[in-house]
Structures are given as structure tokens and as C-alpha cells.
Image (cartoon, rainbow, N blue to C red; front, top):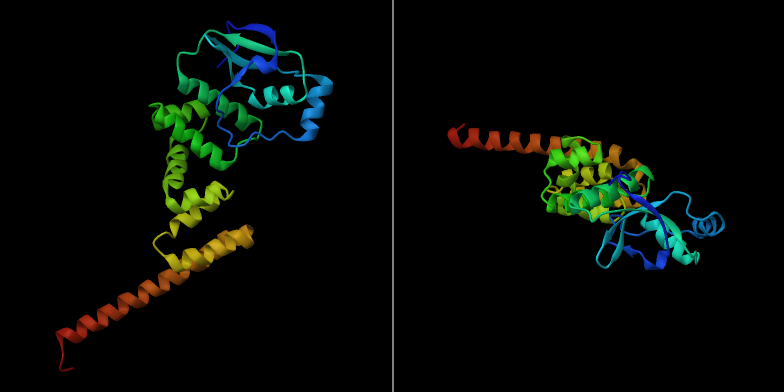
Length: 221
């Protein structure tokens, strides 16, 4: 959403409709609320006019803080009803990314919501100023049972991807999940050790199978 062809209006924040936002939990720290109470909302929020009122597209956190601070009005850029819900959601994601308020889990779930609106990987990548490869990687990790669980636990996408890699190796995965819980900074190093361990075990198993096969071919030897 842009502010082109929008009108700037001063509106009671309690009258605004805050739609579901891609951030799982809007963080309203007391310092932020105090700043809003003292200075007001300096950057207008963005919304669109609908039959039931003005819906906020970008600026959910500022709107909620203004309500907590009991401001009488806040500045709002108001446009005509949005034609594409996917574009609205993309605007929310981009705003929150720029404000460093999205977790990797929120970003992944935002991509899933955009996909649910019918946007393909290329469209999602363009909307979020990223690459198709990154969109595909993020969605694959999120779709993985292990990766999704890790993201929900607050791990980064890279850390979740490491755990998802070991889904078919439950013992290694259990050890790595312990590392992720106790000392996530060591996860990359521990994963390298687990890969080496799996490689050695695979090689030993192949050598054993080969020896058994040779013995079966030459039982008298």
C-alpha cells in the first residue's frame, strides 16, 4: 500500500479497525507507549475506508499504543477500499521487516498467508524484496514438522533448517535439539559433528553389507 491518492485524516484510534497483523505478538513496551503519549504518533499509520470504518493496514503497533496512551486522535493516511488482500498483507510484512519487528517464524507464516492468497514464489519474492530461492527455502523449513516446531520455539530460520535436515536421524536430532535449547550458538558446530558421525556410520554399514554380500557369493571361502 502507498500513500498516493490518500487523504491525511486525524482519527480517534479507538475508532480504527485493527485487522489481523502478520506479527504474532505486537510488542507494546512501556517506553514505547510513554513516547507515543508524550510525542504523539509522528508517522501517520495507513488504512483504507470500508463500509464498517477505517481498517489499519500498516501501523498496528502505533495504533494500539495510541489507544493505551489515550490519545484523542492520530494521523492516518486513508485510501479507498483495497482491491487485493494479498497486497495489504505484503505491506504489513514489509513495514514490520523494516522496523525489525518480525521474527523468522512471523516472516515464514506471512509467506504462507501470501501463498494462500494465490501468490506464487516470484510474486511473494517481489512483494517482500527477496529472492524466489529464499521464499522456497523458508516455506520448506516452515512446512517441515521439525523446522516448524523450531521456529515456534523462537529459533532462527537457519537454526530451524539445521534441525529439519536431521529429521530422518532421530538420535542425532534429539542431541541437536538439546544443543539448540541449551546453547544455540553451538548448533552449527554440533551439526557438523553429527554429519560426520552419520557419514561414518553409513560407510561402515555399506562395508558390512558388502562383506556379507561377498560371503554369500562365496560361502566356502
